[in-house]
Image (cartoon, rainbow, N blue to C red):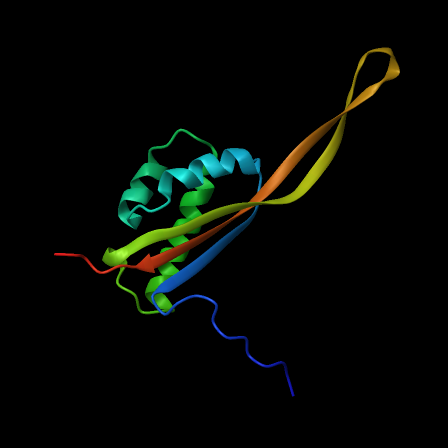
Length: 126
């Protein structure tokens, strides 16, 4: 008497990976996610490997997880995969205080973000 199994929200030719609690602002993470949207996965991995942005390492790890999910859980061919979606969202914000002049304090916000990557198998067009 458990809950009913939820139906799969993605298509049969898609796989998903989530990265949560990434310690970078969503605005900066979205710049990196924009680099890989719509690209083939091998090209996207190369872009992320040689990117100078700090968030590229975290995005690369999530993309590799999505590729592994597609290969192992959904039996998709890795050579046909394309980054269909790369969406970024806000997560929690750590609040810290910084001492200022005359006994005052100012607030420092350290944001976290999350990323959702969907890879889709696409047939090569001749």
